[in-house]
Image (tube, rainbow, N blue to C red; front, side, top):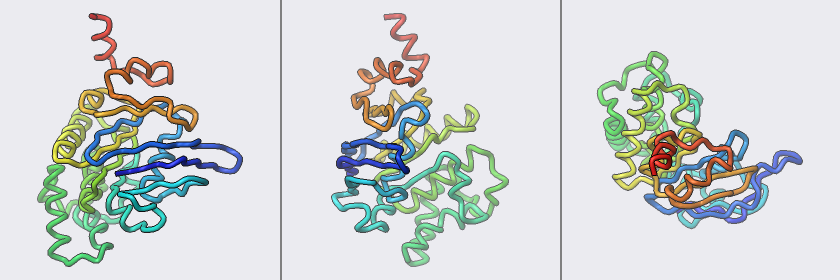
Length: 242
């Protein structure tokens, strides 16, 4: 479980997050919506200690993040908006292996995790390919595999569809559905709710660094436009037909 307890985050005199209190349970699929500058990326950065609250606390499985950063970063896998920002190796296999290697695992365990992670995103057998030669969708899948190799309980993705064409977008969506069905908690920050709202358990919307909405998708979608979040066309069409 992820818990935010009265979290504030300030940069200089600017309040980026204000009094954030929420719980995200194991296995939940959560959409984090909000206009640019609403605080989504900053909130995600607190999930595994990339950022530290100015006040308040963030807990992963009951332990404050700052008390055990390794445990937090093992439990919460992060995929950044630009996947290439998180690559640390030249080839697919080396990059996916990096996290497990830093946990000090035995080589056999590392190799097993890499294999299973690549199978999960359908990149098995491509360990020796250079990441820079891959398409944008394939790079996103490598980034997801790298997070999966840590065997997290939660996978956190920041705008994972940025720059992807429709086939690549559908591929990533398929993998998120599969991971969710297998019990991995998913948190996706995105301005593009297409398809995702139908598989989410919950939508959390932010506005000016605060939680403005936290509800099940069907009810939440009716209020999103007031928060400068675009409602998917398929939802608008359903409402028009109704």
